[in-house]
Length: 260
Image (cartoon, rainbow, N blue to C red):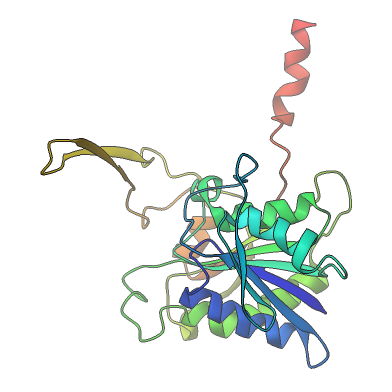
């Protein structure tokens, strides 16, 4: 199996090393793992692409490249330049430092990379490690992802739903904020929503007198609706969420026909 890996935390991020370990085991002795990741951190960029400016790409080692672009840019670079002679069988994005459950998935560059791969017709999975009081002080804060990542992907590849339609399914996996020994198993889960917890801004005035705004987040330990991704994560389960890039609100289409 040929696997392309990327992330949004940058080429030197510890989570990318974890993903490389997982991907190497998944690819097997005769497989290949290629890395094309952002040269710098690109958290929160979502699915953006740099079509208004060029990006520099540099080889850092064998099958390892850094690109001055977004995670989605890195997927494009991997598919159409670095691996253009033989496209990958699978794209993996992560392992993100912090969760991409609930509304976080909308902003996530990790998820954006998997989305771009799916739009390009390549099976793709985003992987993220939830942080909380039970795992943030561990020697290996990616322990749950490191220990359970390989089997989770094998199960998903074997039993998951994979489509070849226009907006093919890709997957968003979040490992719970607990030590590996306390992970309770897998749960198929819908995307949740943390109410009254959206992003905001906080103003600051620099010594020069210039005014700046810092984007602020919100606590990540508040539960979402029962059975949703963040809910099962906080209960110790790995969430597996099928997604599509199709943004149509299909549930509203029939009612909207009244305007015709």
